Image (tube, rainbow, N blue to C red; front, side, top):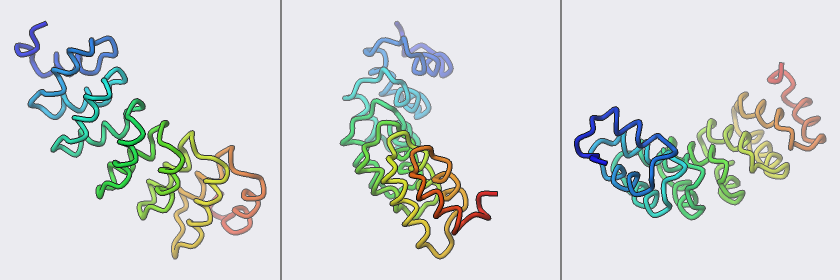
Length: 173
């Protein structure tokens, strides 16, 4: 396969294809265009060592894509969760494989959308949702989307639902 002579769209399609061989993804991960590298970072067949290299990319967009990949190793997710860019932490909070300990830290993030994503994450436990609610209600201005998302999560214990209804019933309408 002659990757060097492919145009941008051909490379993009190849990087996005889940049937692309791993050796081809390795080559595409070194492409000069960040769009190609970003597509490789989202491909679920991208090897762990390639993800580890892509997380060092100078383009934040590529880092965000690594943070979203469900095959990104836990240690990378832990590291990315501490990143100074909210957009990267937001992708970690959306990742279905983010460990509960990382979600616990992100539940107190100052970006409301990250807290909302934690409430949506499939790994969020009832206990974490209660902790997230406890944090949210201490804020000067609790965010309606966060409260509503916590409330709608089926893992939230009934007693916590009643508390939310009592304190923030207007937000649920």
